[in-house]
Every structure is written in C-alpha cells, then in structure tokens.
Image (cartoon, rainbow, N blue to C red; front, top):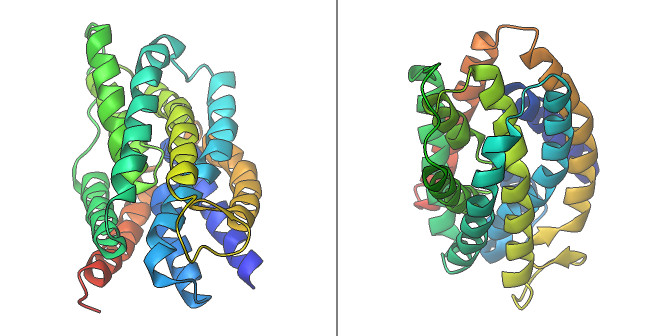
Length: 267
C-alpha cells in the first residue's frame, strides 16, 4: 500500500508538471506528509523529509517535462541560461534556511504558500505582455535567485512563480510554461542536494533515507511522474487548461488549508 500511494501521488504530480509548468511539489509535499504521518514516521522529521524528497522527484519530472516542451519549441534557453545561476544559489540557500525552521512552522509556511498559489490560479490570470523587450540579465538572475529560494523552502519546482515572471517578461504562455519546466531542473537538483546535505546528521531518520530524502519514495514517485509528465505536456499544447487549472486550485485550497491549520496546531 505504501508503494501504491507513492505511485498515485507521482502520477498526479507528473500530469500537473507537464500541464502547468510546475514541478508538482505542491501535490507531492502534502501527499508525502500525509503518507509519512500514516506510516508513523517521527513527527519532527516529516515536513523536512517531504520537502527534500519532493525536490528530488522534481529532478526527474522536470527532465521529462522540459524534453517534451523542448520538442515543441516551448523552451527559451537564452532566458533559462541567465536564470539558472540564480536558481541554483537561491535553492541552496533555501535548503539551509528550511533546515533551521521547526517542522510545524515549516508546515504552516508551506500551507500558506499553497493557499497563495491556489488563490493566484483561481483568481489572478497570467497576463501575457507580448512584444515588450526582455528585462536585463541582472533582473533575470535576480528573479531566479528569489524563485529558487522560495521554491526550495516549499519543495516545489517554482512554476507558480516562474510562469508569471516569464509572462511579465514578454513570453507567450506556452513558452512561459515550457521555460518554467526547464527552470525546475536547477531548482530541484540544488535543493535536493541541499536537503540531503543538511539532513545527514539529523536523528530519527527512517532506514534508507539520505539526509532529508526518502529514497524509496523518490524512486516510485519519480517513475510515475516521469511517465505522466509527458502526457501533461502534450495536453498543455492541445487542450484548454482553464477547467483543470480551477480544479487544481481548489485542490490546493484544501491541501494548503489543512497544512496551515495543522502547522499552527489547530488540529
């Protein structure tokens, strides 16, 4: 049953990754927290383990998603090149910051982040500003640093932040989604390595964990998300995503609200 839950979480996260240009972390993190809690993992490591494992799985999801978008001409590698350095720096710093945050507080922060993403998806449309000149390289690098920092703390691929930035920078939606999928790769690699490093001396880690990365969860979620991300990317170029986007936003409202209230000790 444990493996089955990993596969279900990974499959749904993979579809979201390809469809919306997100890394799937907003699905994987809450799912892993519930799974780890149900299987009685030590409470003081659950949140950090969920975030670290989520980032590790996003490495695989991002490769699958970005390759599918690249084949359709949806990745602006010229912009990715300048954002990537900032994404790596921000992600490593974010992992260090998250390591210093109490598990319940981190859970509440992730829940609040999920709620913000949900409200944005439901009520704030991504507005394309086509034809405007690209922002300076320093702005692209700085945006990457901020996105990497927040994404590493939340355990996400950063699509909910990267897509609006790229829309603002003048990219059409399909290129914004594809480039965002590519940006998830440096975030995930740097963030996962950071969580594995900062968690290596923590007590009460389960067997088979490498720092804050649950190896078994990573394996099964990655397989499912890798397969399903290709379908999501294909559908992103074929289907109107408005209905699915609203459904995803509602799901995040429920998950984010539960995480926030649980982190605050309400239940």
